[in-house]
Amino acid sequence: MEASFVSDINDVILNHYNEKEYQEIYHAIDASITDLSGRGMSSTMDYDAAYRLQQDIATLNTSMMSEISKYINTTALTTSSNDGENTRKDDTFEGQSNLSKINLFYKYFYLIFKIVVIIALLILLYFRLFVSSNVKQNPSSSFAMRGL
Image (tube, rainbow, N blue to C red; front, side):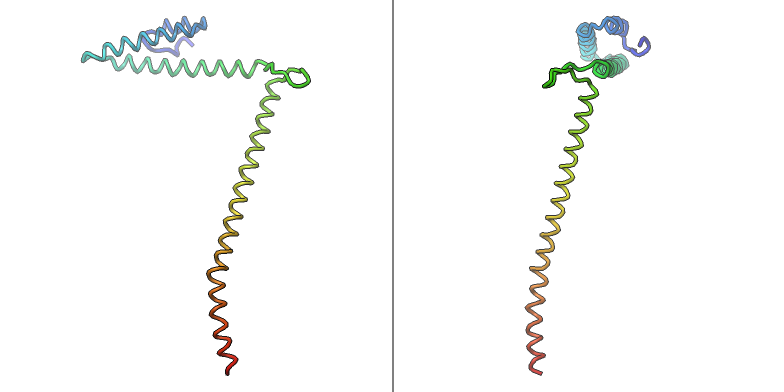
């Protein structure tokens, strides 16, 4: 993790990161942003320092999200069920997976139902407009044929 941070305050960030003092990291970054924006009023804004600080913030966000994911994935969830037993994360993920499958089933079922209704309405419209007009035209020609 030592080579990950590249800003001017990388030592401060790394020390607090190793100690899991995230509030101190926030204060250090906030002070650095204030310092950079104070320099921005003058004509000599340090864009390189601002870019490196931006890289550190992105790296910090990524590593913290990774730690949170590792914690969630390795720690058993302790929610109690009706039987009073603790469920594990695998059960939770399996339940979420089943729920998403059910939701997808209903979405696809609704989509197919809409398509069938649209096709039925188009067929009904076709028969109303085109077939009924052909029926009106055909009897007049059939009466003419009977007269012959």
